[in-house]
Structures are given as structure tokens and as C-alpha cells.
Image (cartoon, rainbow, N blue to C red):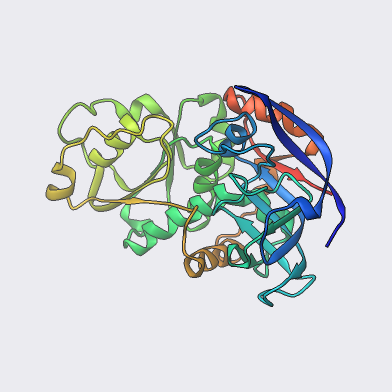
Length: 331
């Protein structure tokens, strides 16, 4: 199939120089795959900002269209997994990394990367959530699977003003948990309480005393989006049989920790990986986001832009200046 569509294209005209322009591309230039999708919405993630500025840890081959999230309507599917007109979500895997992604009005991907939009969610709502929402929901799922109940005590969310953190706060509150949001941006206390946090604490309050082998047990569970010292402190201050999920490394990728919380309190540390999450598991969690965890506060948590508004938001994200998730409108 041939046809023109608009996309953000990142080029590398010379070594260590990357340019970003909105151009008209042809469907025939898209990579191989069974599924062709007309993208209605995407979202901006930190990984997208890195890809757009040439970070080799994300994308090495240019020209390239970033966007690890996409939601839209099936144009064609050569293996019959989907029918034309089906509404689908495509996130993670290699989308937006080395495979042209959701910052284009069309994507072509393996059909196994897509799932049908669950009843109860619109395409727009699905991308208000995106990979960040999926990661947050997977974290909450792991707490539930680990037997952490709302009556067991407060749940700590670190990096609470970030994309994953803020959505974790909202989902946990929707699920009935008492949430303590830890942040370095206390100016956002009102916002965090509006989306569901019962308490908001400065991050230094969480890490104070983390040099000790063990800390006072406070948290029934933790959703950690930071890593490093924050994760160490969270583990050391989790109650017996509590569950700590880990999905971030902005603080550090290192974990300077002894085994005492694990062997004396039975604390469980679970890594959350949304990129290669099995489709059965992924579908179950998206269904929960459309039903029991559906958020009423989504509109207040996002800012919507078109392709032409992405450059400003990419630069702002890299400087840590964004206060809300960025929803990208393709049409």
C-alpha cells in the first residue's frame, strides 16, 4: 500500500548532530510487518526524548521516527490477526526505538505487538496512559499478586510527579490503597493530593537514615520509579512480607544494599519490565485500566499537543521541566 502521511523525522547530518523536522513520508518507506495502523494518538516518554536527540542507548540508526506508544485504527493486517477498522494499542517492544514509531500518522509493525483497545477506553484515553500507565499498572498488579492489601498500611510511591509515579498514585488510590507520594517537587503537593495521594513527603524524609542496615518498617508496599538511594531506603523501611516494585533508575542503576530486609522481614523486590511484558499479562492489565482502575482524573494529568508542539516538549522533558504527561495528537 502506498500513501503519504506526516511524521516527525530525526536525521543525523553529521556525527553527534541530530535534526528534527516534520515531513511527509510514504507508507512504502515503513519497515516490514503484518499490521498497518493509522495512528490517532501517541504520548511523549523520556525514552522518546532520548531517541529524538540521538541517544545511542535507544536508537542507533537514522533517519528515524520516535514514539514508543501508539493507538489507532487498523488499515490492514496480512495475517488476519486484526480486521480493518479495529482499534488497537501498540506499545513497547521495539516501537520507536529502531522501528519507526508513534510520532508518525502511520506505523507498520508485527501483529503480535498490538492488542485490541479494551472496551471502556477510548484511543485518546489509552495514550493518556501509554507505556507509563502500563508500567504503573503492572506495578500495582504485582503488589496485588504479592498479597498486599489496602488494610495492610500505606503504599509509598517514589518519583511521584513523573509519568509512571503520578499514574501509580492515581491507580493505587482508585484501588483503595492509602498512598504516600515522595517527591523532590513539593510545589506539586496539591496536584498529587488531587490525583489520590493521602500524604506527600519530601524525598529526603524517605532516605533519612538509609545508611543503617535496617530502618523502621513503615510501608506495606512500594512502587519505586527512582532507583539508587531511594530504592535502598524503601526496601529497608518496608514492613514484613511487603512487596517493592522497581521500574526506574533516574537516581542510579546501582543498588547498595545488604540482605537483611529480605532474610529478616521477607521483603520481596520485583522488577517491572513493560517493554517485553507477555501479551496475555499485558492484555489483562489493560483490561483493568479500562474497568476497575479506570481513572477519572486523566484529563488533569495530561497536556495535549500536535506534532508541531513536540520539539518544545522534548527539550523541556530533557531539562526536567514538564509537570504533566504529554499526549500527542496525530490527526
